[in-house]
Image (tube, rainbow, N blue to C red; front, side):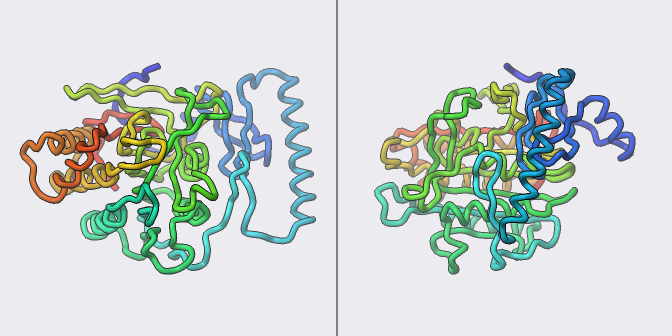
Length: 396
């Protein structure tokens, strides 16, 4: 189902008026886990609490039996949680409502200061048959762009690669989880967050039934063969759902099968002629996959179905780097561009490189390798809300 094209929403004049108008458009419900009051978007039949991460069914709020059951459940949950907290020692670890571990960032991570911060991840999988060559270079280039061109403080950028020193800077599954939580920890209105991942991505059959295409998209940490991948449900729960009003998150994922790897509600379909349409990718279950008032945007290296030459072994996936380089080139060539012009420029750069048109230099040699392997790749745009891609400026 396609969402209608519309312009980006205007900012409200007064905070009080904004709250009243928003309340009239949305209903409220008590969290089934911690009993906090939640504001429920009109289209949602279930919502995940940003505090305790429990999922609350809000499909039939007028049913008194459902209300009573929900109240009893919240009482039982509160008693159970209280007993658990008394019987367990204080710890930095826990688990979310889906069973994903919640681990606090280690002290060695940068202390959060200022309004801009970023996590940059580059995984080469050195010594494996599916080793990648350009991921560390992707991270170095992104770091330079953020610091020198976009005003990010060097101390606000956390880098995870195999070349980094320190046990918490290696891009393992556990470290990647901690880095994502560090990125959103304590964020507040006016903050700009960036998550960049350069590595392998895969698809897995969706056991929960909340994917439109029946597949989960997932990122591959360095140790994924031993400890597994990080699926889009967990990424959404960690990076997207907690974002409060006024916070922006831009995720740049340069990997196979990455089109909807943040599980955002809307995917922008853009034709070569420049026409676009937002598709509603809300899960059939009705679970809300948007933010807690903030804005989350994903620019991904390719669509969900686009992949490398050998998916079973992840071999030949030299496409890693093409999106990163085309993104940096587009930003350098046109500062202050819109999302529509940015996406068009990135796609044009990759298409031109595949045919050798009007381009020369390192980016061409990199992307020609991509197409020599018979790969296809078109960067995608998805978001937690719809907007006019030709009017909304791209700002980090």
